[in-house]
Image: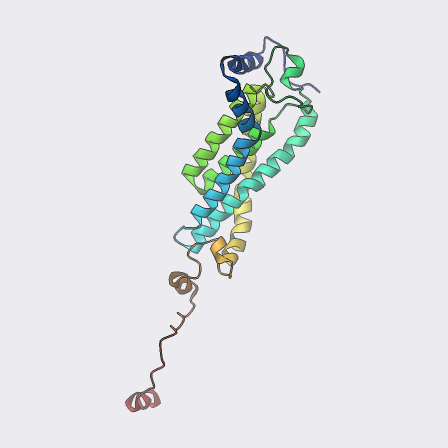
Length: 242
């Protein structure tokens, strides 16, 4: 079922040729850089951004704040995986060929693609990560969304996707990240809060095990090694007896 127009009169096709045509004005090394970034580099950078965000939100002021933020960060790669999984039946239903199959004259920087085009997996994955991170950390989330936008542009520039493939990927990744995030956070935050109180607490909260954390949990402050127990005086014994 080829459900999307691929005729030359379609603005989607015109924009495809306009963007892909930029490759004719760039040196070979630049094309290779775009190919690497669009296929591997930017998705890896998005994953590294998840790790960076996790490291940062662990430093929130309380265990509760850190647990909810870490839950949002953990949701980022899960949302990306779920969105890409949902794209499998979408691709099979739409059955849109890659643009270089129906249109001659494109400069294809990543040959050998034989699967369907709509929607873009790379765009779906990176946008799901970016939007999920935005829920945990505004600045890093905006950086993740910017990575997704550049990723989508690279996919069109490489000649392997139509612009609407990218837009569809952005929509799918955003929808999965936003719609299911409250449910996941509500279910997973208590688990992370429990982890934060365990020996592995620093995976969730950088302040785990500190005096503030023990006080918040109602635990007694440990005795120092050099602290000795002072024997009670006789008058203190009388007061206690009274």
